[in-house]
Length: 169
Image 1 (cartoon, rainbow, N blue to C red):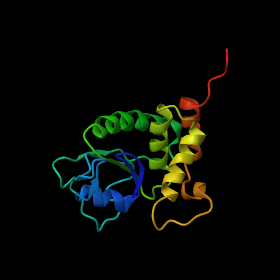
Image 2: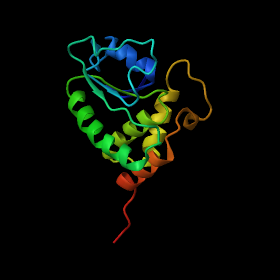
Image 3: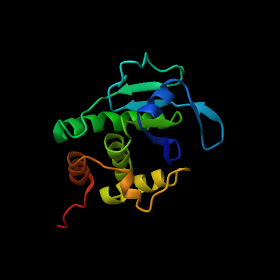
């Protein structure tokens, strides 16, 4: 689980399972609380041996939005992105939010990058910021933070189309 910005976390499948089980993370105030929102961009459960019935904590809202990792194209990602962005912004007002997929490298990275783009970053800078945040995590060792993410080309095209620089008139 990687802290990207205050209250905004990125994760993999194990992070999603932990968040739904009620794991607590600090708010900026230091108070340990369960996640107020979890966005699952992969099927839950992903493995047949896992039993997931929903969030354990009453404070946690769960958005199940399984999408293929680039396999169903740009339209699927863009539609999911619109739903996820509204949910994440609403739940960030209440506390911490986790956005996760299976590996935390493509789907969730792209959704989190879109949030950063909406704040004014270019897609390239947003993806770099996500990669740097992952690289700052204790125990992660890399000379190339960009090796920690791998957004599907379809997702990158959507980010560029929605948030890339507009031509001058």
